[in-house]
Length: 89
Image 1: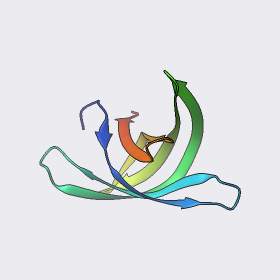
Image 2 (image 1 turned 90 degrees about the vertical axis):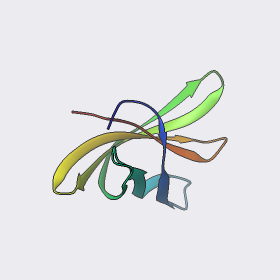
Image 3 (image 1 turned 120 degrees about the horizontal axis):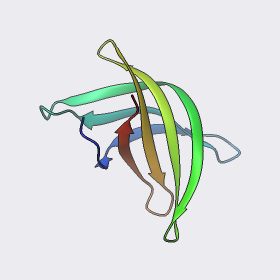
Image 4 (image 1 turned 30 degrees about the vertical axis):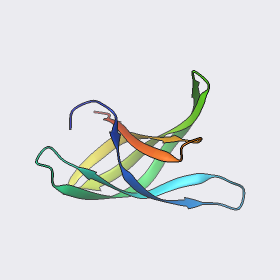
């Protein structure tokens, strides 16, 4: 997967205290095949603000087709959208 910002579908859980945790995402690979990624662990969450836009960046760990992935997902609060930012190697 090339570096860039890719919109993705995400299923997440919201706690009673307002915390968001991504559980599963769906994205297209290089061959335009849809991949379902079950997120095993959220390693860290970082709140960011860029030009007045609030967002949360989640560092997640998952197993995709037998391979371990460490990647970043960004949730934009105002628009309620999720983006796949990058794989961390």
